[in-house]
Length: 243
Image (tube, rainbow, N blue to C red; front, side, top):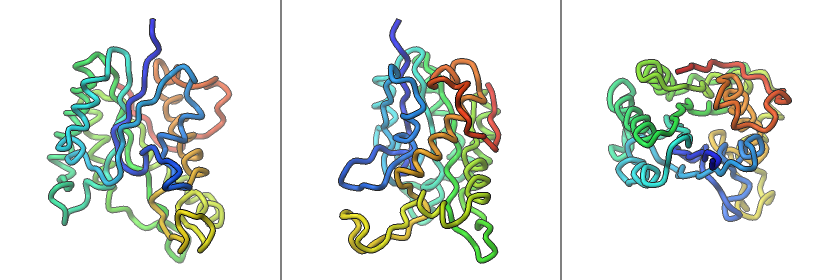
């Protein structure tokens, strides 16, 4: 019996980076450290995509052609669905976004695979009082959780869990999880960068571990994806919603 594979559908917070964009890294890279080595990860996530544009560019169709029975489809969107000024990406959180999520779930299930919804990573935008700004994509977090319940798809609320982790972490630590770079620090970004949406490698590991903790909380076949889950000490301070 062959090992299951994990397929990713998502955006730049998940995508597989290479040396050309280093140190930027995606959660799909970070979680690799927590997944059994025998399990292949097929990362189809692409920068800037929403549930709509990912489908329109036939990227879901590409996954559908390859995914098979007992594989997993991790589905993470929200950051770009909120781009109301871009009709090629924008979706209404209470209508088209939910319909699109259903298409991802159906694509997995039609092939005997297991869909998992993952709410979008929270941005690290900190106010003067040290608290985080209210995120525009929270409507998509709520819509994803609601749709997961209606479709009986397991859902890991990474949005809530990452918010709690960022808020309780000193700002001088959490800033290095994201693409906040000094001038001349990295060859790919000679002028530096201030970016609290995308992750450095350390952040990909931190939030990859948080996602792994969410899989552990789901239990069953999801926990079985992990390397020695009983040894995983990361606390998942969010919600997981079972089938």
